[in-house]
Image: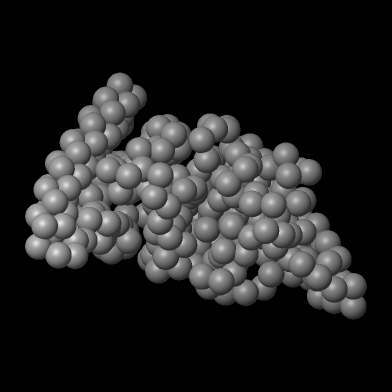
Length: 280
């Protein structure tokens, strides 16, 4: 059951989408939503580091200006979040935290059930085009599932669950079934990619997985795909299936990057509106 949701607020277009999903899930589960805006003082300091005495003076002035601008932008995002949640009648609270976004979010996730975050978060508001690796590190280290959204809102009705017998993929499927974030009126396809000689084992795994989902009240079918590139096969199928969500386990930073940022899927995460529900 979902009772506390954390939404990461940044200047990107996907933040209002994250808030919208949070509202829908909170309304379904009578949950409270926390909006967190992180001011990355470390990044500001690194970007304005000076050299000699003269350059150090100007670096300090630049650091002060960027810090002020960043705090103002964070407060603006908090205001937008507060207005959206208030209009929807959803219980909520807001936080402005200073520090490394990765550390702040992981700490807050110890006390929340689900994190909703944009696909490409930029917490350094003074330079919104500076890309960070925060997302990969969060998914790898968080204690709860991460719902990664794009800049398009899609009603979640068609779901692909990637299942490869690993503990991470089983945990992702279990959390999704137990949390029931989008209701149970879903069309779910559990996909397992295997080599041809593993077909019998694949069918057994799919029977067990769909049986588990059925015990939680979901309608689920299994699909075995023969191939040597599991992540590519799963994501390509998700596009063909017109999935609104892909549920998967994040085994490690390397495998997460392969799933979410890999060239084998032509940067599907960045280009596709399909959200991800990931569990480490």
